[in-house]
Amino acid sequence: MVGISFRFIANALQFRKTSLFFIPNKPFALNLFYMHQNRRSFLRNLGFAAVATTAASSTMDAWAETAAKKPFFEISLAEWSLHRALRSKKMTNLDFPVMAKKEFGISIVEYVNQFFMDKANDTAYLKELLQRCKDNGVKNHLIMCDGEGNLGDKDAAKRKKAVENHYKWVDAAKFLGCKTIRVNAAGEGTAEEVKKNAIEGLHQLSEFAAKTGINVIVENHGGYSSNGQWLSDVMKGVNLKNCGTLPDFGNFCMKHKAGNYFECEEEYDRYKGTGELMPFAKGVSAKVYNFDEKGDCVETDYSRIMNIVKKSGFRGIVGIEYEGDKLSEEEGIRKSKVLLEKWSTLA
Image 1 (cartoon, rainbow, N blue to C red):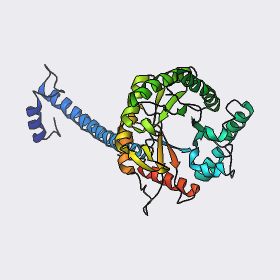
Image 2: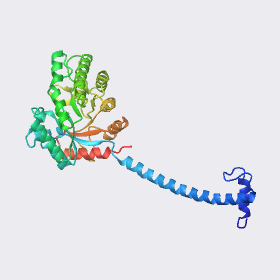
Image 3: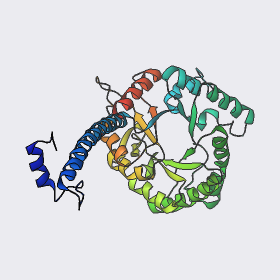
Image 4: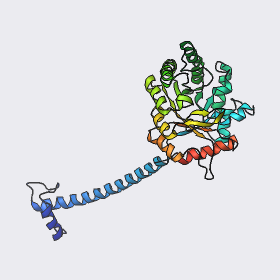
């Protein structure tokens, strides 16, 4: 076999017993030829495999980098962030979704029923609101419902009435393309009494809402509901897939000082409470009052609390709810958006 080096013959002899290319019962010289040819093919294919592996590795690295940068939640705007403008008639509920998109670049909105309280059954009004959303590429997420009675009322008749009062908001939410209504688990009595009644009221309402595919979620909103353990126990008691929570970073005051709503006398730990409510969360309310010179929230450590949100496995919508008074509502919303975007890709 002219052209085959002595080194290759030596290697072939060493390789003979283990080579996948060795053909039994054939002359050794012929085997050397086959081995030489297959060795060249093997090395060439090995080179191709190395190139392919490198390319695949680079693609996976690029994909992983992109995935790491992708926010783990979407940002919505809660209408309450503009409550001063709405109450002063500088804008209306119909203006809200348009303003969210054009002024702040936010395409998901959360309504507050207080700003269209008499319109839940007004089909013409709801059609106009929905059309404005469609024209501006805005998605409706939820309606926050207040003023319809206590779902944890100790009086069975009043509790039933409160449940039925929410039916129209379930229907309005369905019409507008929302997925959810937010309600309150309020009532009078001991913690155990209110818990029992709230479970009953929420169960009835959630069963009704399930017929149209609407979620019923409870916010920590003062009183017993601001106790994360208490509200998580309520969720376990209701035990329905469409009933969940809306953890609010700033609503953990269980008792305000007498005569001063803005000072809290008894507050539940917001990080502990958020952690307790996240397993049931179908949304998150990112409350902000004030910012420091770096643009971070003064009241809440956003790095810490957003890590709690992410580690819970939540992959949904986080709503901006600016409630401060040191900045204009517009500026507060913009700074809140920057803050959320800052922490949206936490590892």
